[in-house]
Image: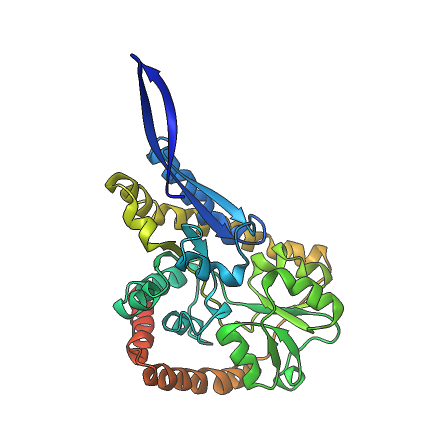
Length: 333
């Protein structure tokens, strides 16, 4: 519903009609650090347009999280958030950002590499096949795992481990003998509680939001195998139907929405250690030799396989990977 008519009333015997723009936005779970930029974007856009362009943010009421891109493609709603690992065949190009051990050090770097990749013509062309325009990323820190029982603090102990992990992180764990499963974030607690999985890989906010930290006995503080990439996209037809002023209000609000997200996420990270102590969750530090061995098994082979596979499918895979590395260098200059 891009344009809705609101009858303003009668003046001098004539009915006047004001047109307002209303977008439906599909996310999932509950409001949390992962969705704060979407919430802030809606707030900014409404303020800049004096309430003439509003966004109704729905947490699971419009679509399942793995079907958000499909919903965008058919115009079921105008904006949505999704994660690349949910349907890797539909968003192959951005999965470069999910390769393990890329070396992204912080959330500012994650924003920079994501937006650089999003701006690449091959990426935009692929997303356009789904009638989707990439608007902004949902930057997350490196994932780490929580679990129960004996800590999985060596590669040998990870052999046979059933882990909730998607995308490149799942592939990384698979390379050391673990068994990744891609149950959705909302299913992770039940999967862990019932023993379907032994461990769950999330960023900190998700361990909070999906309560996996409530049943965890330990957490790997320094494994850092990678992260997932979760864009916010808009339906191209809806975007093009905006007035110039509405489009400007939307586009000009992205940087501020991301800045708000980063500030809010910093507060989540600041309280993480206190929560671990409060819930008596042991912080597990892997030996550097184990991390190096993990990287040797996961990083180079998975990257080379990804480049070969994506190149065979007609994507500029090497170029996309090089773009990530070049962007990281620029960020550190």
